[in-house]
Image (cartoon, rainbow, N blue to C red; front, side, top):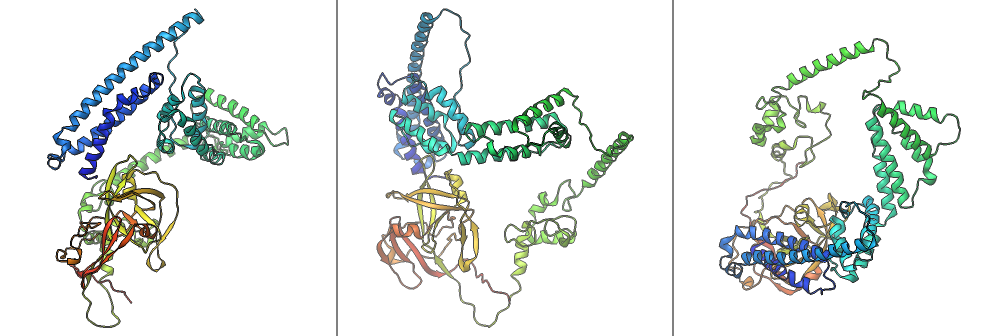
Length: 602
């Protein structure tokens, strides 16, 4: 969660935008103040108020922190609410005035042009585009016909309409463009250049076609889904100048393969008079007639098995009766299948089992002859599940991981005898930084400066919190000894700065589920380190156990490094000056977290 000072800064900026909303609208000039411009400003004003109100809800829980701040003394929340209501009232009044003028002009035009009565049609809703490639052609054609080709609409109004129609990932491409007349053509060209990608559109249409499920039987509902899916694919490919064309034979073959056996037999009968490969137009007519035939029949599923005898009806009834009995027996057997509480659920979902320690769970599994891998009622050597422990990938259930790990570390052997060295505490170079999310707000996180890493990395948790747009990047990450530690889940661009607000830097970071197990937690001294007195540390709270969510690698280390190095005595950290502040690293004394020694088993 963002710190209080950052929230107050952002809330104050929003208050300024809300207060100036109506004045900024008037600055457009009377000639540019249209109904579309007023509606766009009203929509933007409501969004600003929603953000401002949400920040005040957070600050309301931190009254003790802000009671001496100017924000609380001047009662900015109340002033912001009053400004919002006043500005919105003025804009609504202006909108009503413009609507009256437009109705009067339309009435005068209709009276002079024709006297014939006209039925009032419902208002056409503008299309919405979220960034899916297959939706672009339809959005493009409808928006151009409604807005783009309308000569009475000014470019600045078209820009407002375009921004209100574009959502999601597509919005990121034009979000930074201001709503001016000159930027409309630029914004539309940006979207066209990005989404007018016939290769990706073709792949998307064909993927949807190939994902159509095959018909399981002679059913009008299933055939209707197949028929509409085929027609949609053909029309979509034609709209981007990629008709079926030379691949017509393959397309017809794939489409026929989706039909049930009875429909395929009917199709082969209909084309048996010629030796030429059938065309798509012929298949379309066949599917349409076939669909009408099935829709006219009663809604019963026809059994077309060739080996059915006259007594099939009685056999079917007896089979159905047997299945009902089997279901009753199965339902009866499920009662008390939980070995921990005798409840009607699997043991892995049992609250009693979840409350057990890892060793107790292992004893329970072994005592009840359960599978140690899937917790089923069979031996582990008979387990058909391909899933292993998600923590270590060994052949046991994840809930038993700690029990198996402790049993493995009991048996150790040492090649030579000698005193075990006293463990020491080591500080890694951490820094507290501010990172900008997709909405422009700054959030404080902890970063690790590691010049031994070739790339910068960010955790999946922080990426989700910042809601940043990511690009695809499948990069394998290797650690010490050349061991593969993971594969990136994409790539994002981070904008960060130090807590004191130095110039921002841009970092390209790979996304990984987890970065490092290092979390500080040093509880030793530090107040007597004379060589650190007066230094502005990049991580003032370096002793805390906060998790690390950003790893700044060698690609960033060189740009933040400054001249300045301070060394202390033995078991005292080294201080290096950076643009983020002074970072500390090195041995700082004996550890206080216990003597955990990892040994190699021979």
